[in-house]
Every structure is written in structure tokens, then in C-alpha cells.
Image (cartoon, rainbow, N blue to C red; front, top):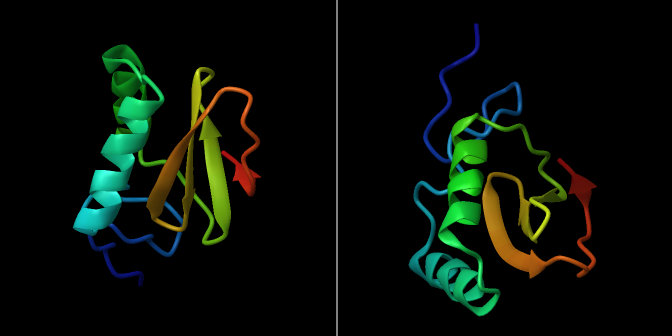
Length: 94
């Protein structure tokens, strides 16, 4: 029987219980800075919020989610940065 997943960690099924719980302060600041630098709108951030609340699956290797006007890049249960449309993301597309 599988144990329940802890916040911010992957369950045995690979579902991310939360992309944002327990982020180190430096990473949280980096993400906010990148969102501002890339002029990501509130509407776009709400789409990101809806996606992460849907319990998305992500591999332990580098991954990205393309939202059209920007990409969220991460690895495992952690987001790492935002890229602009047209910037090349590495890893597995979600």
C-alpha cells in the first residue's frame, strides 16, 4: 500500500502534489523576478495556477510546460524558471 505523498514531493504515481510548497526563498525570489522580467500577466499566472492545482505529473528529469506566451521549466517537483515564447526549453514537454 502506497503512503500518501508529502506536500511538495512526488507520489509513487508521479503526481506533483504541489509545485510551490516549501520552495527555498532564493528560488521563490528568482521565479518572481523572472515572471516580472518576462512581463507575465496576471491572467497568464492564473492559467499557471489552474494547471498546478490540477495535480500535474512531471518526471524527475528536466521538464517544461508551454503556456503559449511563456514556458515554465523545472525538474522533479520544483519549478526552476520562466522562458519567453520562442526561447528553447530543454527536457520533457508536459
